[in-house]
Every structure is written in structure tokens, then in C-alpha cells.
Length: 365
Image (cartoon, rainbow, N blue to C red; front, side, top):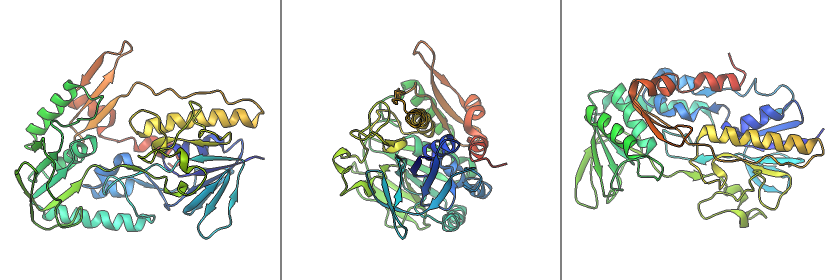
């Protein structure tokens, strides 16, 4: 039976692993001891109940294959080198290592116990804080602001965004910005745009200590706790110094064909945040890409040519501001933009944050 080595147990990786498990000898290699549902991480940052909900075991994912906890040092063709283990020889390799992002949107620790301890300390720090600074007015910064405002209604929150408006990335409509801006005003959030900070607060993200900073325009901002909501970076360092390095772009993504094969390689694929597919990096996009890879490797296992291609889908923006507020930007079949308000956004994502969907995918009750 052909062996498929999948590097990374995030949204794309687990989808590929589960889809190919009945057809091949699947080896899923993941650094973390549990799956982390990052889409709900910002809720977990303010709610101790959610702290438990976002960590899920890989125990039930595969019926036939194996989940290997380890860190990949390099990949040579279809040979995967893991620190402290013998190399894993495979017939196919799927790169699905995702991206890094500052805490609390993502966690750097490979041990769920350490990540939970840091979350517990954050909850304690937030209980004592009177004011908070959120640096970055994109989707992560705004969603975190909503969670903070919902859980700590007396907390004074300031968002600092270096661009002239929040949600400055191309693709967000003026209607969405207006709706979110109005809700932020209702929450009493101060929004400072048009200038980045001249310097960052002296303490670490999430630590409790009063500080005063300024924007480069000279506007003063003070707070007791702060969060960095920018700085996503594809996790592709393990490809540096290998034959794959020429395929890496300066931003860390890797070049792929429409079939999601890595360019120049017949049996190596990539999915999710590390691909150079021109679209926003989202969990649902990673899962859709994973289905393309499943179809193509399945074809190859049958001796056929992999001809399923990935086309970026219409991007829906579902942006909760805590459990009961938020806004969404949908595209109708004719391409027209439609904005949904707080109630409908909460129905789509705000309450459950897709936890039940992910648990089902991991074969958990």
C-alpha cells in the first residue's frame, strides 16, 4: 500500500489524512500533542470554558493510519526527516504546516498543558486590567476586541491601525467597514487610524503592567495589557536549505500548480496557508484545498493522471464581535455584495464558532 506523509495536523492536514486513510498508509506528522481549533482561540482568550473546548485529541482521527508527534527538520523529495526519529520514506508528501501568529490567536507551545497554563494566566491578567490596547485593525484585531468587550464590559479598549481605516486589506467592502465601525462605537471602543505605534509596549503580549505609548503622529495611548494582531507567517522554515527552497516566495509561501502539486514535483502537494494561492488564508479554504489533494492522490493511486484543480471560491467574511455582535460580507450568485448584521452573524458563527464541525471531523463525540 502506498504511503502518504502529511506534515501538519491543522485544518488542511487532518482533512487530507482522514480522506486518504481508507486508501493509503497515512502518516500524519504534527508537533502539537492536540489539535487546536484556532478559529475559536480568541473566545478562549477571554473565557475559561472555551479554554478546554479548543483543544481536541487526534486519537480518533485515523482508523488505519498513524499520527506521529514530532517536528520535521527537512524534506528531501518524498523523504521526511523528523527530529529524533528515523526518516519517514513515503510515496506522496503533503505539506500542510500552516502559519504562525502572535498569541492568543495561535499558540507556539507544542504542549497543550503549557498553552492552557498561559491562557489561565491571561484570564487572570484580564480580570485585573482596566484598559487594553489592540495593535492591528484587521479581522483578528477586531474579533479579539469584540471578545474583550463582551467578556469585560468595563474594559477600556483602544485599537491602533496604521492604515487610514480598519479592515484595510483589499476585498473588504465599505459597507462591512461601516457596520463594524458602528458596532465598535456602540461598544465604546476607541479607534486610532492613520499611524502606527512609534514603539511597542515594554512588556510581553498578554502581560499585566501599565504602560504609555505613542503613535508616530504623536497620539498617546495608555493601557494595562496589549495584544499584537498582525504578523502571520507561513511555517516553511523546514524547507530552507533543501531543493524546495527556490520555490519559496519572500513571504514564505510555496509555489503550487492549480492541482496543488508543488511546482516541479509529481508526488508532493501543499495545502492551506503555505500555498501561494491568491486568496485569504482561512480554515475553510484549507479544507477545500485538501479535498482537491485527496482527489488527485486518489487518482494517482489508481494509476490515473491527477487533473482536479483548485479555484478560489467566493470569499465570505464572517466577523463576530463576541457571541452576540458582528457583521458578515457575503457574495450573492451574481457577485453582488450583501452585508449581514449582528443577529445573523451570531447565528452563522458567533455562538458555536464551528466547534461541533471540527469535533465531527476528528471523530469526537
